[in-house]
Image 1: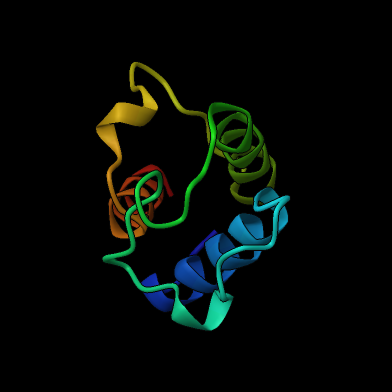
Image 2 (image 1 turned 90 degrees about the vertical axis):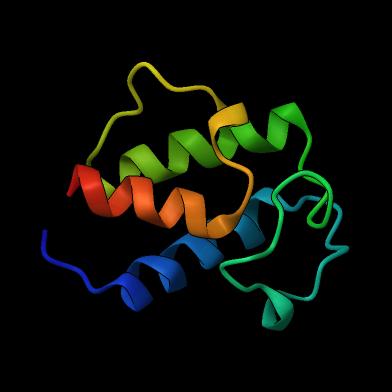
Length: 84
């Protein structure tokens, strides 16, 4: 699957919207610099959902990494780019 960085970001944004069960963050304000926990307020359950959705959406698997390895949305986009 060949996707541009912006296409990956847009798909990831959709996943994050779904993971935000409280609906507290305006998706239009998501940037690659948005911090997953401190700005977006994702809980461990939200993050688990996000990981599963990323794996299904992009057909990749997270191996040998923890969510502490990803501080921002951009960190996740970079990881996905590398796996694709």
